[in-house]
Length: 444
Ligand code: LLP
Image 1 (spheres, rainbow, N blue to C red):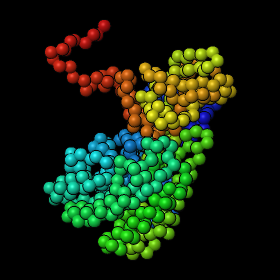
Image 2: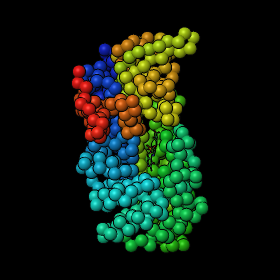
Image 3: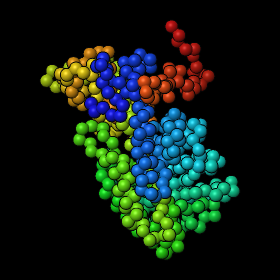
Image 4: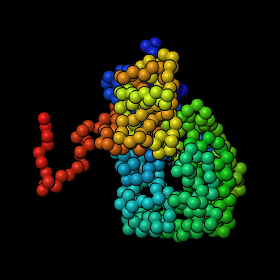
C-alpha cells in the first residue's frame, strides 16, 4: 500500500498515521475507524492557497464539503482560510454550527427547496450558485420578501466532457441535469434574466466538469469556452463578470497507475488559461474560485477494519471479511472504485497470498477490494484501506442497520475523536412505533 502523508511503518511493524500507532487507535476507538491525517489535510489546503497566491489573481478556494462534511473539518477549512461549498441545509447547518463564517459559504444544488433558500439567506451566506430558471425565480421572490440582496453565480455547462473516473461523475457536458447550457443559448438567456432581478447580484458563472480528473485540458477548455461566453455577454449585454468559478474535480492517487498532477500544476494551468483567454474582456481579470473536495481530504483518510471470517474456494479465490464494507465505503459497489490495503498490525511481513476483501453486508456486491496481495491473513488482524477520506463517511449508510464508524483526526502523536461511533440507540432514534402495535422491548 502506498503510504500517504504522515503514514509510516513503525519499529513494531505497525502502520502509524499522524504519529499514532493504529493498534492503539483500535484499542481506544474500536473498528471500523476512519482515521484522518490532519497535517495532510492542512497541507493540501495550503497547496491550493499558495498556488493561487503565486498566480497573482484574486481567488477563493471553497472546500466542497460533500466530500467529508463534519464540524471539525469545517473548523480546519476555516482555519486554513478556505471558503465552503454546501449543497443542502444539512451541510449548511453543519458549517454554521461549526462557526464557519457565512459570507464564505456558497450554496449549490439543482433543487434547493424554499426552506433551504430561506435558511441560507437568513444566515447571510456569500453566494448562491443558481442551477436553473425555477430556482432563479424562487430565489428572487424569497430575497425580495426578505428585503435581501443576494449574490449569485449561474451554473453553466460549457460542453466539456472531462475524463472522470465514472460516467456518473461527469457533469460539464450538454446532457447533464446540472446548469444552463452555453452551446444552446440557455446560459445567455439566463444571464439576461438574472441581471434583471432586483434582489440578485450576478457575479459570474460556475462550471464543474467532473471528478477525479488527471489532466489539465478539460479545465483549460472550460476556461476558454467560459471566456468566449463572457466576451459575448460583455459585448451584447454590457455585463461584467467579476468572478469565474471552475468547480472541483482534481484527481488523487488511489492505486498504482493513478497519475494525478500536483495541486500547483492544476492551479497554474487554470490561472494561465484565465490570463490568456480573459485578457481584454473587462478592465480587470476575474477572481477565480475553485471547489476541491476529494483532493483536500481524500488521501488523508484511512479506514481501519478488523478481519473476521474467511472462506477459501479451492482454485477460485479466498474471501476475507472485515467488520465494515459498503456501509462505510460504498464507492467500490457504486463506481467499481479501486483501493489499496495493508495488514496494519503486521505491515513489515512479506505478502504471501492474494485475497479479496468482503464487507459484512447481506449482499454479494459488498466487496471492498478484489485480489489484493497480503501476508497470510488471520482473524483479528487489522486491515487498513488507504485513501478513504473523501466520499466515504459522507456517503456512509446504515444498511443492514450497521452503525456508522467513528472518525478521528490524528496529528503529532495525538488523536481527537471528531465523530463518535453510532450506538444501538442511534440506530432506532428516529423509529416511531404506533401505540396500537407497540410492545415493551425485550431486555433479556
Ligand atoms: N463542485 C461541484 C459543483 C461538485 O458537484 C463537486 C462534486 C465538487 C465541487 C467537488 O468535486 P471533487 O473535487 O471532490 O472531485 N461521490 C462521487 C463524487 C461525486 C462528486 C460530486 N460533485 C465519488 O465518490 O467519486
